[in-house]
Length: 330
Image (cartoon, one colour):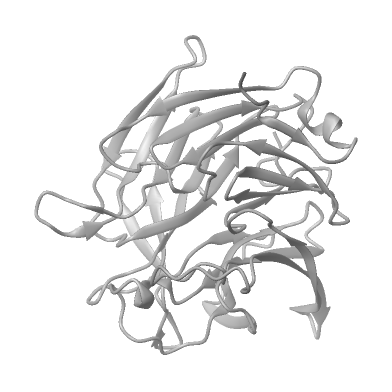
């Protein structure tokens, strides 16, 4: 007898999953872990852009593969296209940006880490957005979110150096804000061990950041280290944003909290070692969508859809149709 994938910890979880939640595998690829990070849903075309976990290509080079998946609403099936890209080295997180997608490139020994905008259609023209902190190279930019004022916020841990494909770090593990209008960049928060996923609350008054120190890029795993989500208030001094009142929001009991998103009710979702965990805005664990092997990241579709990236599998979870993403608001 199989266990239910819907693990309730609080009565309020029923409002999240609705009366008839469903979970099914959309696509499986045996050749390599194609479904690892990013998860960028394009509502107009029902397309999903994702990045793979690390793999070795036919030439023996370590790389990350960008994939575009097309959802057929009539059949419920998903087709996949591999997108070659010579500018986005070791791609990771991503987010909808203007008429394209903003990808995090972790970089290589010779190519920079930073943020790159890629067009959604072939030939997938790609342009760099920011590739250094005032001339100092980033470590390995991990995840990114865009504020309604147009500013871009992103995390930069040292995973690339630990995994052997980036030079020795020249910056701390920090969180940054880049303003495309002025090309100004600021370090917004430090004190993290391994800053990873990030997202804003629906009203953008709170920023959530995951710290995945429990797992280091060298393969070491220590349960004494942090695997938590922190919340910070976004306030303004002299007309500029600052982050204050940093506090522990939640700790993931299984694995690490990696990718993170909010719904329009302010509930906080994170990809963890056992699937997608869901907390209330006050930090109460409401429940989990259990997926064997867990997930690093996920994204919302429309009307309560979740696309869960599970390495060699991509899952579709249907929550309550009233659930809407705080990012896309659909």
